[in-house]
Image 1 (tube, rainbow, N blue to C red):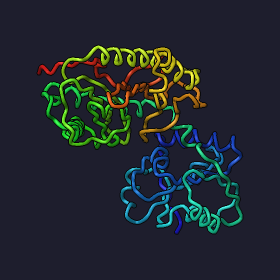
Image 2: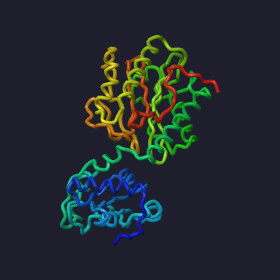
Image 3: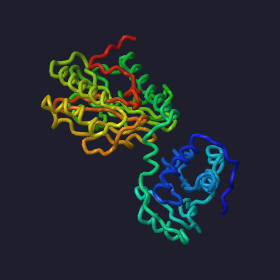
Image 4: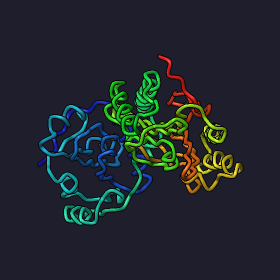
Length: 375
């Protein structure tokens, strides 16, 4: 079936496709087959569950946009027409092979998102062209957010902030409540604040469970003296927020207060290091060195952070082994933690956007260890 070709209209997604074409020409590709649905959404705005996109490398003079085609199946023709009115549409169930049928030239594909069997289908469909591995090109673009994306992230962070504030104000973190109850209420409050859904499975870890970075909530009740770690986020317009706060149920012991202060110092050092041109491994080191100097280096068992956007964990990585360099517009988390087996742990996490003047937090909740539940 031949694709339908609508009138062209400029927009944010078209600008992203133009930026991708620059990368394709640098890579010596005539086109890129995009099969990951997150990348399809980023480049087109289409949110259906079956789609592929063929982006041609030609500029306007070469008709690159005119030859770019979105493929989906008949379930989504109305949705695709509404969400992607500026793109030619091909209606076929087997989207990716259909886009390559009869094509020639050097066609890139994202090898990180294509199975061995899927590759065989693409090779069968391709006529006289060459299929070339081209992983990560769209992800390179996604790492730097535009204003619309940052606004969606800001709204997602605000929904999580509102949820936590509401929990505290209405005595939702009192002794006797279970981890599961707290997690469920946080998620419901995020929805009430405008979230489509939680960003990920909410982590609520009380007492000794707070020493488990990715603890799954249980029916364990909160008890006086517990460290309580909550790692949660909201999904707004496809964009994720990510925040962790560790609070004390009751009055902290000296060791708990000291541990929280140490993690807060490390987090502040990490946030201060977020500047364009800085290697993300150096950001990790800025925070990690604080914890290591205090003798808890072996208890900080994960990277300092990660990019966040259409996926909860995306480029750039912020860790000791990362190879990325920060740019203005990147949104990342800073989340140092110290975990003491059998006793508890502390993690503080914020989502921030990198600007020329430094990092701006998108999460706004207080980072204090003790909280007040006055309405």
